[in-house]
Structure formats: structure tokens, C-alpha cells
Length: 173
Image 1 (tube, one colour):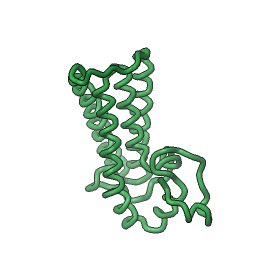
Image 2 (cartoon, rainbow, N blue to C red):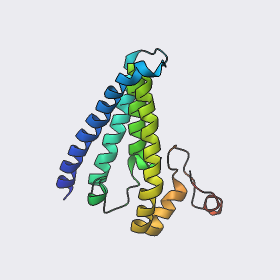
Image 3 (cartoon, rainbow, N blue to C red):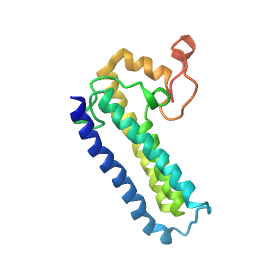
Image 4 (cartoon, rainbow, N blue to C red):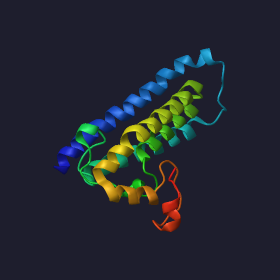
């Protein structure tokens, strides 16, 4: 079962990385119409940032296969709630990784269009998380997901909060 999920996950990794990378490079064609410029940084810094974001995505996708026994696809969702690895720090590290990778590509290419694509990807991810993923996870995993929401923020890593009275009164962002 894990081997099959890992194989499917490898396909997702390839499609995910190549798809977003292709979109970022394609968006670069729009730069001349925007009339904007990004600051000049050494391209290797942007590519390093992109590689770090991509590595985060890859680790998360394999966590879906090995820990969750599934994939990110709704039709092949994990059978177990994943709170391991990057999921200990943020609830949506795949999307964080994608945005970091896209921002890295944008900086490496000095492409404002690719940077706008990163912003659009984050907005799309936020809408997807709010409207579909979180309600679905609440139905699927119940109280264990609710505890997780109290302990781990949606987008930005912080020190873990205890699921105590103070955390229960605060809504996670």
C-alpha cells in the first residue's frame, strides 16, 4: 500500500514541480507589459530559495504517502491525519513550499509576473484551504483535527501553543 502511494506521489511531485516551474517561466513573457522591475539579486539566491521550497513540497508529498497512506488528491486522500515533519510547524506546508519556490524563481528571473503568479497561487491556496480543505478535514478527522488547529497555525510557523484555555479562546490564523 505504501509503495503504491509513494509511486503515485512521485507522479504528483513531477507534475507539481514541472507545472508550477513552467507557469513561472511562461509568466515571464508578461514582464515587458507590466513595466515593473524586481531588485537585482544574484540568481543563485533565487534558485536556492526555489530549491528549498521544492524540497519542502517533496517532503510533504512523501509524508502523505508514508505517514498518511494517501496523496494530496481528494480522490486519494490520506487515511491518517499527518502532523509529522513540516506539518508540526504549519498546517499547509505544501502551499508554503510552492509559494516559496515561485518567489525564488521570480527573484532568480527578476520577473514581476512570476512574483504575481506566486501571489495568485497563495490566494488560490488560501481560498481552497478555507472553503474545501479545512471543512473536509474537520469532517474526516474530527476532534484530532480540532486539537491540531489549536496547536499549529495555518501559514506561519510559531512556537507550538498548548491546547489549553488560552489557546482555545484564540482562533488560529
